[in-house]
Image (tube, rainbow, N blue to C red):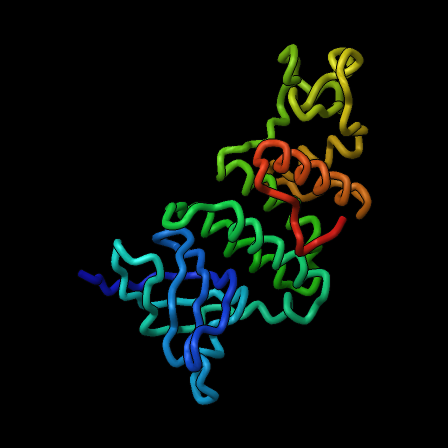
Length: 244
């Protein structure tokens, strides 16, 4: 038996289906990631079809059936279009990278309201003329890792437990995580975090957005997080939407 349910949803992907329909992958407020068919969405006169566009934040009405892999969308309202992200090449790529993480690394029907709200918020922040999309993506990446169970620990040395804040720099090893300088001398170092890089990493994990950084520093942090995720999730082959 189907339930009629209204929920907010972010469009992750879409494909044409048959002659008149589309199938979209959504990340929803109430059910996490789901796939659903939108019948008639390919018709030139279909307003619904125009709204089913990647990155749009929608309110959708579902005919939801637990035994069905692909649900049915019966109605759609546009909540947010994020037009400024779409008009900026770099913003758009980082917006797509946010969606890619959700599409590739979350499970179907695994509800996470905090992850939905965090994603909607970061897209809204990117949708600003003055926003640094790369900085916001790095901040989202750390948040995302925590929400899927791979929190990147920044507080203490992964070997001896010493607090790293006093040292103001750290070394990183795939197996041990962040290490203090003493422990790092005896182990392979995959990434070396200078004081500037370490301060940037701490800023990205807090509510503080006031820190000196360069775009190269952001690239370094994002690459480190990407490699960290690839090490822990073997099926993950890196973020295709951005090449750093």
